[in-house]
Image 1 (cartoon, rainbow, N blue to C red):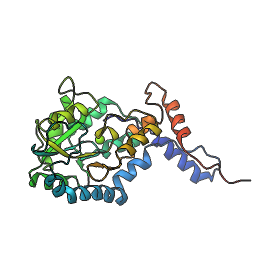
Image 2: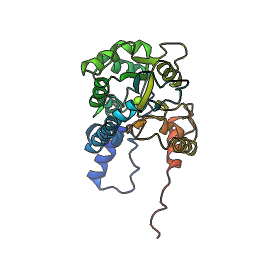
Image 3: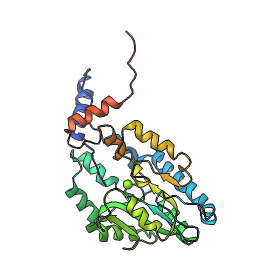
Image 4: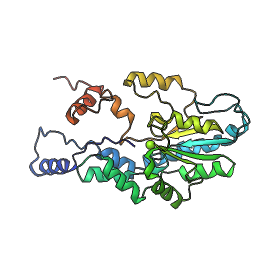
Length: 284
Ligand SMILES: [Mg+2]
């Protein structure tokens, strides 16, 4: 998981207090970039019902996907796969596990993501299932579909990840089915090599993720280029590819600043502001 949330929660609180106390006008807007996203993710029925709807739609299609031996969801599937046993591939973070407690800590502590604090969070194994994820994975397993978890959590985090998944009864939560970044040399952050590894032995009938890279490696373009790739696979969405909403981080954010993480936080934020298509405001 690559997080970039730069939040300014304390500034937001102070700015809000000042606004209330003095009725001040022309306050600079608080730069609490992650607050609404994390609040929505953690509390909104509008989030939870969206996730439930995505998983329920997939569950209804399981029998069709299992029965149609030409059905595959993996771009990496090749050769004669029709007789291979069916499998599904799911991302972990913000797809089957809800890490909003970490994101909320980033906001409330007025800090930003770091691999060190993220690793500590992962090792606590306190993430909870995303709405609908357990139902879908259990329904698939009950129908003879193997479940693979392809995550960009790092290889040393496998034991904690498996523990967290097993705690809630996710099926196939074991070392063979949890495929993390760096477990093998060719398993980098791009996930195609891991999808290929599953597709070598299984017919991959559905993919689940919260990030474009959970479906294709062709994710690092501009905003417009990403939209073109999305359109290229228009028939996949909601049938073979299932996207969970995640407004807290993701490749959608970095595409707004040219995927250039060397830029300063201020420059990245300005690029994001510039990417907005904004009304010019009321005419005087
Ligand atoms: Mg994810």
